Length: 277
Image 1 (cartoon, rainbow, N blue to C red):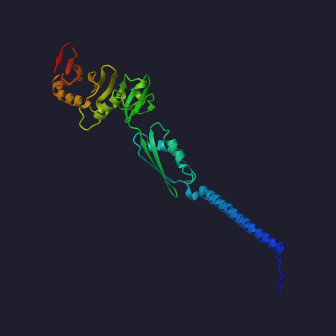
Image 2: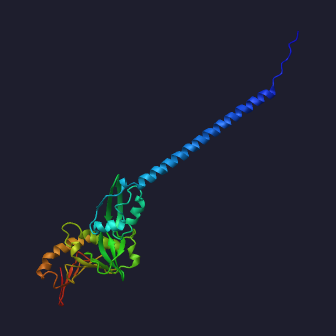
Image 3: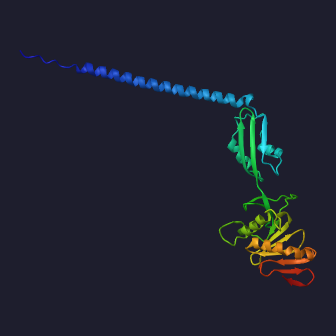
């Protein structure tokens, strides 16, 4: 006897699959909704706690320390920073404050640290002026060759004044003949311990593209001609000359000491006679 073939209920299976698909999609949608609500709730809590922390009197700045001041008084730094002691320590932007501090003409860099709950530490680095550049107007030059501010009227900075430079000379490049590089080399030698021409004794440095560098020092009008290059040898030669110059009553009666060629140093006295050493 032949078996009777049983037909599958396609319609019934299709309905079951649709219901399973709907349940799966509903479950995914529910999970997404829960995740969205969780994120929204967490964001709300974070904003709430942020507002609480940045407005709480428990985190008001009560102690500000300032380090690195040499020329600028700490009170001026605090005034420039414009930090009120009632400011919330968590509410101000450290990066913005750093940018504002270095806009001060004397401040080269600034490091700011906050110590929760109520302390701010400010450490600044000031520019180190080594010369005054006279370009018609006077500007301060630092030890890296950067002009960092205009010399204010009545402002006194005990560094040599440099004349004879042009704006085009202020860019330090790899050229050996850089006039600004020559000035910086002289200043560097003058700051060494035991220098025969200490920087505080140099009143002026004149730059001439043909003659080279001429120094005026020891509050006298005696010209010390160095020319260009071999400055260490010329400083040493000037040291050797000092006993002779002291016998000439120091530099008071010396008009010029020509050290451009150390093998042939010329000392010219103020009356009319010129002597070769």
